[in-house]
Amino acid sequence: MKRLLALILTLFTLFSITALPAAAADTADNGSGLLNPPSNAIVVPGSEEISPRIDVPYTLNFPTDNEYHTLASGLSISGNTTVTVSGNWYPSVINVYVQFYDPSTGNARSVLLRNGVAATFTISTSAIYTLRVSASYTPIYTIDGHMTVRYG
Image (cartoon, rainbow, N blue to C red):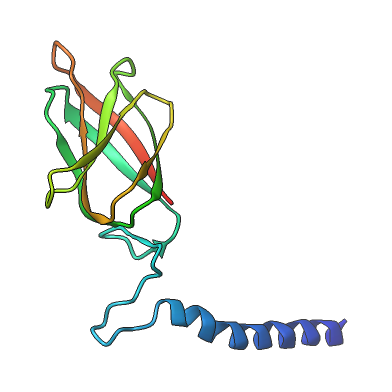
């Protein structure tokens, strides 16, 4: 039994040593102290995680005043990235517009999101985006809940 454990530990150590350089090459330090993310990565500000697929939760708390409200800015997203958005909020009968806005061009990709129903779409152009939400309802209510965005 001790030999088996020693063999497993030796193989695990050997694998770790040989696999580390290849994995480290994908996110090597570029001399500025910043990591070079893989070309298909989504970089989310405030997140240590750089990944081709990442789920990011957002808290929703905004009025139904037909104005866009920023949830996050500085989202560096590669072109042809699939995005899935889902969420739950109150009042649940109100639909929420979710928009990825490129302030440098004024272009946007928007989707109408229903409570509890996921929407999937593609962001076709690489850019630095601002994630915004909006809802319109009279009388004005406050949307209160959460939303998750899956990048990749």
